[in-house]
Image (spheres, helix red, strand yellow):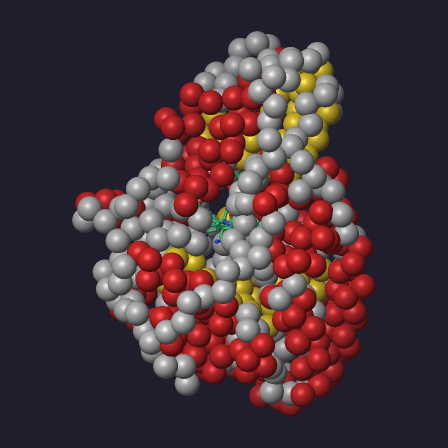
Length: 519
Ligand code: B12
Ligand code: SF4
């Protein structure tokens, strides 16, 4: 057991991070304006500084769908290019100068988005902003863009391009998330650099969540996102078309509607591919669903446990089983060879300085293969932000630091510095040799692949940096992913042979896998 004060007994090691992962590429202020290419749109995912505590691998596991989702609605006479500044290939292109630059804006990279926008606008391009930060802070974004897209870009992008062509661009375009999701086209993944991501198949089958946690961006003032689902056959077609062995579902919660997840699993099963997804732990209410997920190729789930304190979860209005039952539910997933990546938020009002040691102990005791940590962050326009502001606990509004790796509010039972120290400690602890070893699978056959995954994912940031820099992520990982898929297909054949005997699953040799469980 880890002593409650262990995190605060020693100074922490400084983690290695190269400057190009903390500083955005320079934009030359003296670059003259070049010729504008009509009907050319450039879509940019701006640079954000990486956290040296976490794995660099997470940034290239799978791409955001923010840009590819609406790129699919670009009229045929427009050329569209994609640039992700986080792939370390330098600043976005400008020769020829695009007629339109579309930028996705989150609060953590809003400042960089503004720099890029100002640079392109000064040289004659029309800049369009969309994304979460535009929705929560439109007035802050407006001075830097020719137009803001508030809400669903899939509906707005064709209207915006039409108005650009007619020289009738309006400053704001608004769309809700209430249309039939099945009408959306598939994201245009062909514009992505395939070699740069472990898999280009980020899938999204649903939008929304049955919960409304006060700290989640889904609770943002003015955002109405009813739970909407695509038809399972649409998802199957997207998965097939992208021709990758592994997909990551980036849905907020793929498990909000269990009947839907059952139907999706039935459709995915014949593909013989593998996938991971974010779900809430209550999916384990239905053991047959866990079996169905395993049979359909689910190798890992990303679960927002958030906290091991029922009081914290009640304060956040999260409808979830009692925390005392979490361990049993994790075992159910493990029994079906499904890895668990637990996501934990640190700094809630019932967290004291022992929260770091207790959380690490629980993760190790329950052998969670991966864990992701976030310092509680009050996102603007959420109930949590309003509450903290009313209590005078917001320390500053430097959005760059609202990256869940910094304490931006006054915690109740510790100082902001202690919260940041505890956060860094828990990552270092969970990425340590001792912790990786303590969490090895109970079945020894699965241990070598678990260890390979852990070391490659958690302790190889220098290696990840090289892979990203030299566009080698996909070529190097693909054989490992393919091997994981192959082993999983063999595992589920055995699982299927066991018929409906749910209790028997634990006796099967666990499949073992090198891919980590979700983003
Ligand atoms: C994939 C993903 C990632 C990937 C890729 C991130 C990237 N930017 O490249 C990885 C794993 C690297 C990642 C990392 C992080 N992420 Co992240 N991530 C996501 C995730 C799961 C999916 C994003 C996505 O594709 N959504 C689907 C698209 C279609 O929706 P959308 O982005 O809203 O886009 C629509 C509209 O907004 C609009 N739109 C968007 N941009 C534009 C632009 C134009 C021009 C137009 C017209 C329209 C438009 O049209 C789109 C279609 O409707 C979301 C959760 C989610 N399900 O959305 C979290 C999320 C975006 N991440 C979040 C966070 C906090 C992080 C981290 C900071 C966490 C951490 N500490 O590690 C890091 C670092 C990133 C950073 N500094 O910003 C938060 C952001 C909260 C907030 N209020 O900003 C989210 C919402 C998760 C959450 N529940 O809290 N993430
Ligand atoms: S369960 Fe997760 S996705 Fe759903 S509202 Fe809560 S934090 Fe957001």
